[in-house]
Figure 1: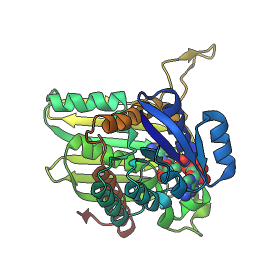
Figure 2 (figure 1 turned 135 degrees about the vertical axis):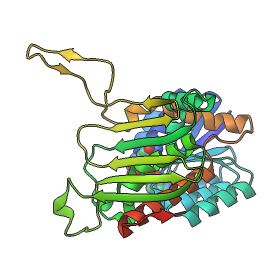
Figure 3 (figure 1 turned 180 degrees about the vertical axis):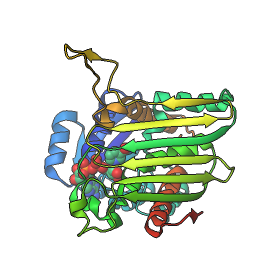
Length: 335
Ligand SMILES: NC(=O)c1ccc[n+]([C@@H]2O[C@H](COP(=O)([O-])OP(=O)(O)OC[C@H]3O[C@@H](n4cnc5c(N)ncnc54)[C@H](O)[C@@H]3O)[C@@H](O)[C@H]2O)c1
């Protein structure tokens, strides 16, 4: 068994916590850690683990623990991941891996030095449709990949700190880091250039205080091997959570995702058909999180490389910063 400590018991943390307790083979959720007493108590009431901690250093000192899942606000990822690697604990860290490239490099280096696994939380890579698309691309069925398009739109009103793009990076950081990872994965290459344009369409009243804030972005990318990429991102779209992708090849194409929550269509006496929209990423990707957590435990048990590496985490952080620089300077950025 792999004994796991969940560090951070908030929104995303509880997804991993519930999976580890109920759904993951060869895993034991042994400990919870959160400085916020209320969150820790609520998590313990539901998950009933052996140990609880408010200080992650104390959790890391527990020899029974083999691995940690870091799901704290991103600003704390670096210090916790480095301390975990030094304590020889394997690491699953939620995305973004850290605040900037330098921090990512430090985490990667410490994990390598201490010979621990480092997996980053890009759960779309574990989604059945995304995995099937990757297999179809690799089989050659659609010919050579020419263009990869991906979009993510989030429904919720931004929290106050998100309007400050020096803290949030706006939608490029909040939602598009997943799309940037998807494009690298499907193009099987690294990005050569990015051009991003955006605007604030839904919260004009915030423009005075936060003139750089944008809620919608469109990015054009070019890969080193010539493949083209297109991403769009948006926050506060209100209609639902929307994540779709399209891969155009020289002799075929692949479409992933639609906006519906399920296959239910309701026809009414007004001659209208209604279909519920997807409400949340937690619903859309719930099975992908299970597979992501199982893959983390498996790579520890089998001593194999994680399917999403620290390097993938680093590249996503780098591309978010490059995209934002392009948007702010209104010019193509080359990598
Ligand atoms: N994969 C995804 O699509 C996805 C989705 C949501 C969030 N995330 C990422 O997960 C992370 C957490 O986001 P969230 O929405 O769950 O946040 P949240 O605010 O709901 O939860 C964070 C929790 O961490 C706790 N915490 C703060 N400092 C801590 C510390 N030093 N040690 C232990 N716990 C600490 C907080 O008390 C809180 O309970 C962020 O990095 C976020 O970007 C990823």
